Image (cartoon, rainbow, N blue to C red; front, side):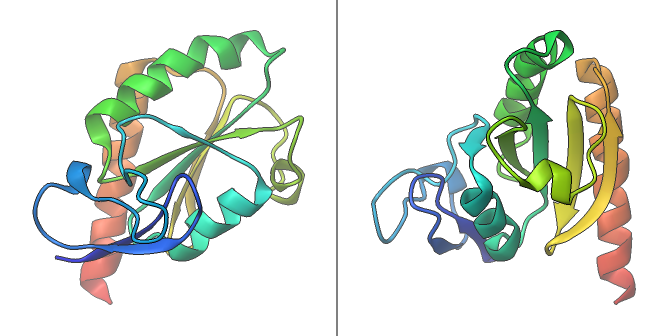
Length: 150
């Protein structure tokens, strides 16, 4: 199955065919497409990933001064290591971007899951690794159900 994803370095769309996705590289800049780590994005990078990614995109909206955000960071990183490339993991600094306000984010850390550019679900506040995994499993199952019905 072929998927499309945005390059974490240059935001160019890339097709990823079968085989090991961790070996996939950007056709434009040569960067690895999947690193098993969240990608820090600005507004343009966030928009590119939403527009170009055929896989679900999970964004962590955070700020450096936020204690719960700092606690959530290693949990989010661990999830990215184990779940990517099934889900693209992004980090969006609320102090440096406009997207959180445009998305109506009222509290951080905020996790928002998107698929095909549309919001699927969101959670605010600190979550354990188990809670994050259970929430993602449930949300991904709902995406699979939506796709099979269409």
